[in-house]
Amino acid sequence: MGSIGLSHYLVVAAVFFCSGLFTMITKRNAIGILLGVELVLNSANINLVAFDRYLGPGRLDGQITALFVIVVAAAEAALAVGICVNVYKNLSTVDVDQATTLQG
Amino acid sequence: MVAARASDSTAPHGEAGTAVDRVGVTNAAPAGGPLEAVLFYVVAGGAVAAAIGVCAARNIVRMAVWLFLALGSVAMLYFLLAANFLGAIQFIVYVGGVLVLLIFGVMLTTKSPWVRFDVPKRELFAAGLVCITLLAALCVVLVGTTWNSAEGVVPGAAVADLGKQLLTTYLVVFEVAGVLLMVVMVGAAHLARPGD
Image (cartoon, rainbow over all chains, first blue to last red; front, side):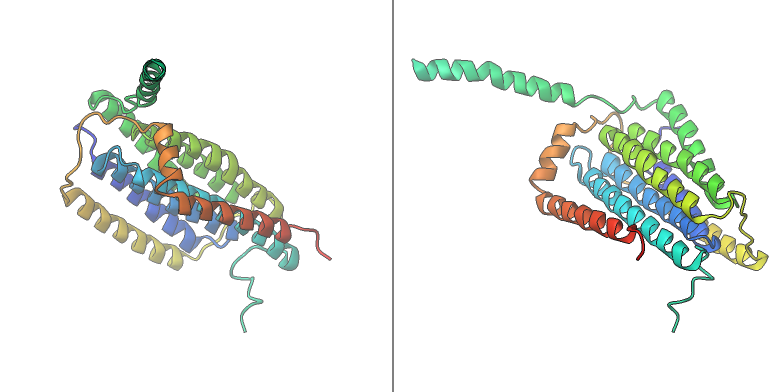
């Protein structure tokens, strides 16, 4: 086991990104897609914090950006769950393949 | 005389201030050595397993549980990266807030907790091919790149420094984030109101 460097964290973030992408592609449930989005956002955050730690220690730019990503992710989750509940009330499903009312 | 006394009285105050600052800046990163490596591999292995669990699980509740583990492991990674405050925020906002919200979403929108996703094999294959190719390409590039990175122990960020930067350099972004949160709060309340 060598010392842990920047690329170790970036590889973990890459696995997170690809898992999130796979989840977004394959799941049909809107909430499942939302879980994939959260994984992708977390992978971006791991990258930001790792770059902050290894490329500019003490400058805090990466950490503050990650903080704002968390804020936006929380806002997005709140709105998306509200929309999902509304879609379920109207169509009694959150399957993204069956919610086709908006198609012209 | 008065001025001298005033400067005398401020001097220890200033020293106390710097002492507080010094206490805030702790060496949060574990010393770069076998301990850090072991901790990293344990936490990163858990994180990777949980992330793969999210995309492999076929039940929405199980996906949420795997995501819970993945987000917790990411918080541990933040602690390893000497980002104490972000690690705490990750636990509080993500694990405590967003995930609970998502689980409420699951409960409100599924007819039965045991609904399984039936995805066509062809689609699974195509998606897996895309994602594994992307992952392999990313890993090849990331491992092959030499970064001009700082090695060794790095002082952890003091929360006070984060707060200072938020209210000076990033003040506009901070205010915009506040407005965004307010708009989202109003919007979510509007969306969730009882129908007419």
